[in-house]
Length: 270
Image 1: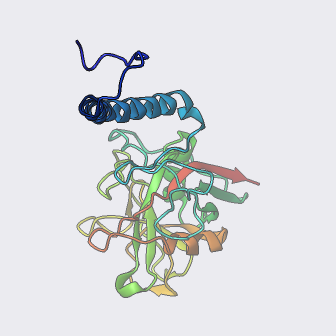
Image 2: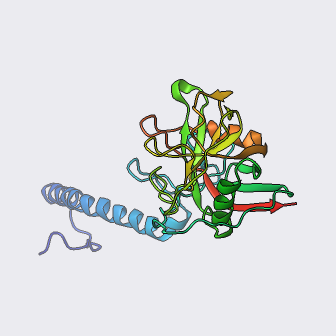
């Protein structure tokens, strides 16, 4: 007789206390043996309901999972609130090998260099009368689209004081140029006061040498000898010049931490 078989209705018989005790003991054993199975089945059933209703259950966040973007997640910020739009750094251009333009600008007209940057627009009146050769060569580069996409690669502010901002290098390092130089000694009485625009050169080059790199004076007056070829003067967008001068830089290189890009450079003549 299988004592674990389901119980069946028993026939009535004379009371037998010993048999009754045995039966009670057997029933208790069956219940105890069945209990783990019932707990297991109950657990399986609960998991089954979780599988079926998982779409309605809230997700459990994991401490190790990366956060997901939400509407309240702040956008990446620039390193400074300098008023300039964030733009990617341009790739360095190939070193060009050009020839200077000899086409002089009409001295009877006003020629304004319009530089569009991610910090705003700067307007520079070219000093054709005092620098005919320098302005002619520079205008030739503008007509070629040479400056489009180049940067202001240097923002000099020694000791935290304004000095100059410099751009026009196709390499973006301060070592590049158009592949040529022209020489035109600047006026002997030239002073590099704020918003004067002049051409950069190496210290070993003779006075008035220029290629494509230019600088805008941001100090009240830069203590420079009249060795740097004159280009012109800022007549519009002076606040933009100030804005660029405030862009944070790498102290070791004076290069801006965020790109300042000349997206478009043109000459307006009237």
